[in-house]
Length: 219
Image (cartoon, rainbow, N blue to C red; front, side, top):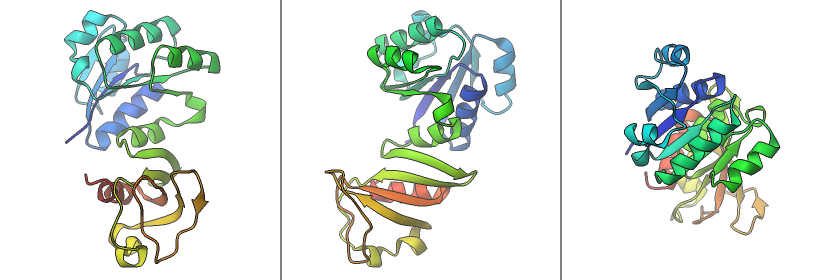
C-alpha cells in the first residue's frame, strides 16, 4: 500500500522532497501559501494546493488527519512552523518531520512533539525523502544520484544463510556490515544468517535497495 505524504513549504528543500517522493510513486500533497511556489512545483507534483497550513481548519479540510507522514519544510517563519506542527499533532497525524534552521529551533520542535527534525545543511532533501518512504530504513546516505548506503532493519529472521541467499545476484546489493541489537558491528561471513532486529548496512542502487528492504520486511 502506498504511503501518503503532505509536504508543507515549497522552497528548495520542500520542493525537492515532494518531487522525489512523487518519483518514488508515493501519494503526495504539496502545500504552500505562496502561489508562485505552488505553480512551480505543479509541473512535477500532481496534487498541489495554495493554502495557509498554519491554520488547523485548513489542514482539516486538506485531509491531513488521514496522511501517513507530514513534512513541515517552512524555512522563513518559526511561528508558522510551530503552529503547523501543533495543529498537525492535534489532528493526529501519525508521523511529523520538521525542517529546522538552527539547533535551537530543533530543540523547540522536539519539545512540541516532532518525530524527526532535519537541518537542511546536515541532510539533503533527496536523502530524507528516500528514508521516510520506509519505516525500516533508519539512515540513508546518498553517494551519487542513484547509489546509496543505507541501514535497514531486519524484520524477521531469514532461514537461509548469506551464501544461500546470493544477495548480490538476487537483489543487486552488497551487505557491508551488520549491527546487532546491542549495537555491536561485525562483517558477516557467508554462513551467517540475518537475524530479527539486526540492522543490515547495505549499499546499492535505489531500486535494488527498495527490493531488498521489501524482502527483509515482508512488504
